[in-house]
Length: 622
Image: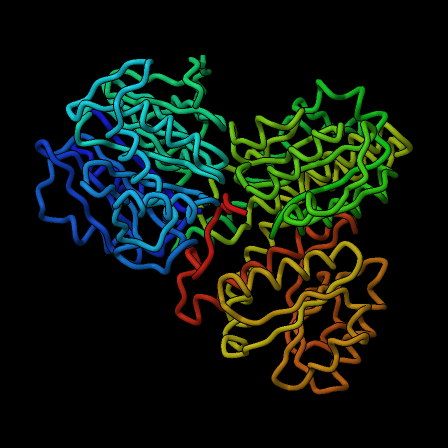
């Protein structure tokens, strides 16, 4: 949630951090703001709405300062408004900060500060941090020493004393009028990355705000604080112990984050899926041996052979990928699998052991609930694995081993190519674990050969975009849709329903088609259409029976069917065809028309499908 960007160097800060905010806007767009060190003072700008509103306020102001911080907000405490927008300040407006996360004990701290005559101007938890720093900055310096123009603690020491009192999560970037040559950043549960330049440095909550300026980055860990200057940086723990950090070279480019001629990032990312899947399996799929080789799991290979149970933890779209993975792993690798919402995992008593592998799925690698689930799993002795798209992310670093998606940056809030790349990795994992167990060479080769065809088959589906757009136009004004699938395509029904909810604000339900008669059929009438995912697979006839029941009650039907299936046209009002493939791989194909359908319904409703209301790309708060 929320986006942070800060710059210190030789160039004007305002254009750089505004451009960075635009790249982070998918993380939150209720409001935006920035503070710039300008001729001995700090100037502050805020605007409700998208970053463009902030840019309008800044344009023409001739701001020449070379140090600044900025924020794009997804509201947690306090409604979107100018007063609740970041940056927040202390009473004297000399300390300015931006914050991602939630300060759980903010009310207790606020009450204490009010008794000390501090005056608050917002409803947020974040403002408390600025006033605490002010309070410690005014106090006499500790025995560690320190000096300032106000005769109290130095800037860093005041921040360190403040952090000791905070409970909850934070990613912080702080500037101080009295120490104008530095930005202090701190992390606890909310991602921050430092980009290293020549005579300049940039900080952000996501590398997408950094790639235009440098490919050399340092990822901060929980409990670390950095004092960042134009020519230097110092990283310590919050106990003020020095930390040696590895510099990582990014493999993302600016071009990958641009729209490339598409109207929206979401459409671009839907069309990137053949490449995303090819990149996910490249060098890993060994078709001649019917095998998959996953280098990221090499160090735990022996332990994986003795795994007796797998638990998959994830949220949202990643959870649906996990459900598909469950079907794959149980049918072809013969391993019992449970799929858990990460947000619920640690609030029950999961039965884990050293022979359990817990797989965390997260596009960002920063999802707070999923990260907490992994930490719980490690505490209980389970093998912690990750399927993550973002190199260097927290989940990638904290798991015992894992597999990167290699899907590239996904900017659209509604996940598309990350989902299909996650499914691809589950195919690879199924091959690897299955061949270790009872999967035959013949079956392994069959899966591998067919998996190699999937990118080309998706390209065939994408060529139907105008057909799908025409069908979507018929359903733009419907307020409810029922999505149904069975076996491997039940999770795809859930995912299709989630997509249209996210970007079109249509009430949609995803159900296993066998459950329809146990309740949902009561909703069906001419104004409540259904989408059936009904390829020619082992449950095809059962899906047809469900469609007949819908038809008998006057319901409209869109069918996702296998190419050449003419019979289904007698039951469905509209049909979208997907090529024939192995049953376990059909989700990689059937999800594509559902993504396009949701996209075109959203566009047809005049909505911003890249930035749906109330949502953010990465959920870094619980």
